Amino acid sequence: MALTGIAYASFGWAGKLILRLYPGLAEDIKASGIRVYPEAYASLVAMLTFLGFALGLALGIPAYLLPKLGFLPALHPSLALLVPLLSMTGLPLFLFIATITYPKMKSFTRTSKLDLEIPYLAVYISVMATGGISPYVSMERLAKAPKFLFDELRKEAMKFYLRIRALGEDPLTAIEESAKEVPNRQYKELMLGYASTLRIGGDVVHFLHRQTEMMLKERVSQVKAVAERIATLMEGYMAIVILTSLTIYTLFVVNMALAQAGFALGGSEIQFVVFAYILMPMLSGLFIYLADLMQPSYPVYDTMPYKVYFGVSLPITIALILGMCLPFMLPPGTPASVVLSRAFSPTVTFVESIVKRANLPGGFEAGIGLCIAFMVGLIPSVLAHVRSTIVHGGIQHGVTLFLRDLVEVRKTGLPPEKCIMNLSGRDYGRFTKHLREIARQVGWGVPLSRIYERFARKTKNWLALITMYLLVDSIEVGGGTPETLETLATYAETLESLERDKKRMLRPLLLIPYIGAIIIVVVVLVLVGFMNQIMTLAHMTIGTKTMVSMFLPPVIINSYLMGLTAGKISSERVSAGFVHAFLLTLASLAAMLLTPHIVRSLMIPVSL
Image 1 (tube, rainbow, N blue to C red):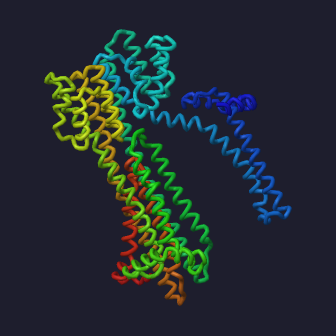
Image 2 (cartoon, rainbow, N blue to C red):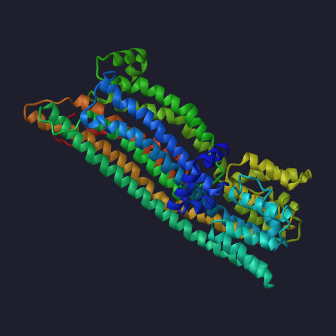
Image 3 (cartoon, rainbow, N blue to C red):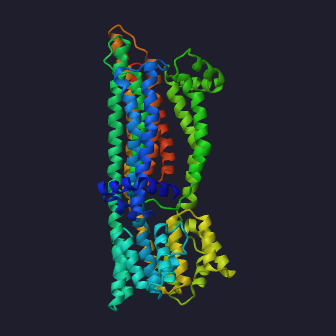
C-alpha cells in the first residue's frame, strides 16, 4: 500500500491517462476484489512501467557500447541493435501488460471460485430456511464458517455482517447491496429474488428451494459442459503432441542420417534440443494450465503427494538421471562423460547389463536408464497418491449414504444425536471410522461444532467437509428436522452424481496417451533402423548408436509429461498424473525392449 501511495503521488497524471485509455480497468479492479482506488492502481502501473524502462535502459546502453569499445566480443550486425532494443522495450512492456491485466486475471479466478461456492451457498440457505432460519441469519453464520469451505463467499458474508452490526443497515438492504457488488449472476438472482419475495410477502422457503433446484440443474449442465471441454482439450493435446512429435522426429532423424552421410538438409542439434527439451515441455505445461482454468479447483485437497514428489521423488530422479542416463548422452571420451562414468560406475554398469541381457544394440542405454530413473523416482509419489486416494477418496460416498439412512431413522422420531449413534454400527466405507469416532464423541456430550473441527482436521475431501458442515449447522440451529435432512440428503446425492458422471465421461480418454507414447517410441526406433538400412544399401554408414541415444531421452521425457498432463486433465489433480507418468514410462520402456525383436521376427529389413 505504501508503494501504491508513492505511485499515486508521483504518477497520478499518468494514472488518469491510463484510465482514459483503458476504461474497463476500474471495473476489473472492483470485480477482482482488490481494495485500492482505481486511479492509484493505474498510477502504480505507470510507475512500474517507468522503472522497467529505466532498468532496461541501464542494461541496454552498456550492451550496445561495450562491444564497440572492445570490452565484449562484437555481436553480429543484425544483433548489435536488436539486443539493446529488446532490453529497453521488453522489460517495460512485460511489466505494463502484467500489471494492467492482473485485475482481470484475479477477477477471473474470483469468478471461478464463486461459481464453485454459490450452489453450495444456495443449498446451505435452503436447508437452514427449511429449519426456520432466515437467509440473513445464515449469512451471518457463514461469516464465521471455516475459511477452507467458503473462501470468497465468507468475505462477502463478513461485509454483510459489518453492514448490519456496524453500520446499522437493515438486512434486506444489506442483502441487496451485497448482490450488486458480487460479480456473479446466480448470486444476484438468489439474493435479489429473496429480498423481492420477502418484500411482497411471498413464500420464501418455496422460492429458495426452487432457486436451489434451478442452480443444481444449471450445475449439472455446467459439469457436463466442463467434461466435454476437458475431453476436447485432451483430444487436442494428444493430437498436437503426437502429430508434432512424429513430424519433427521424422524430419530430424532423416536429416541427421543424411548429414552423417554428407547430405545435410538443414537444421542442427541445437534446434532439436530447443524443440525436444524446451518447446515440448512448455506445451505440456500450457495444457496443464488450460486444464486448471477450465476445471473447478476445490480449496481443500491432500498436499502430501506433492510434498513427497518435490521432497523425495524429484531429488531421487535427478540423482538417478546423473548416474543412469547422462553418462550415455554425453559424447564418449569427453571430460564430463568420464567423470560421471567413474563417479556413478555401479549404476552405469547396471544399465549396461540390462541392455546386454535384453539383447539390445548400443545406444539404448540412455533411454533405458532414463526410464528406470523416472520409474524409481516416482514410486514414493505414486504410493503417496494411492494412499491419499484410499484414505480420502471414498469419504464423500459414505457421507451421502449416511445422510440417506439418517433421514429414514430421523422419521421415527429419534433425536439427531441418537440417530447418529444408532447408525455408527453400519458400514459406510471410508466414512465408517469417522462416523464411529463422531458417535463416541456425541455420546460423551461433545458439541457438534467441536466434533466437526476434529473431523475437518483429518479429512481432505472438500465435498465431504461441506456436506458435514451443512449437517452440523442444520442440527445445531435448525433442529435437524426430517424435512431439513431430506433436503440435505437429496442435494448431497445430486452433487455426488455430478462428480461421478464427469469422471465416467473422461475415463475412456485415458487410453489415448498410452497409445501415443508407444507409437512415438516405435516410430522413432523403426525410422532410425530404416535409415540405417537405406544407407547400408548405398554403401554408407550412419551412427545409429549416437542417433538412438540422442532421440530416445526426449521421447521418454515427453511420455513422462504426457502422464502428468493426462492426470491433471482427467482427475483435476496433477498428483493423479504420477500414476499415469509411471505407467507411460513403463509402456515406453516395454516398447523400447520389444521393438527391435519384433522387427527382426517379422523379417523386416531394418536393423538397429
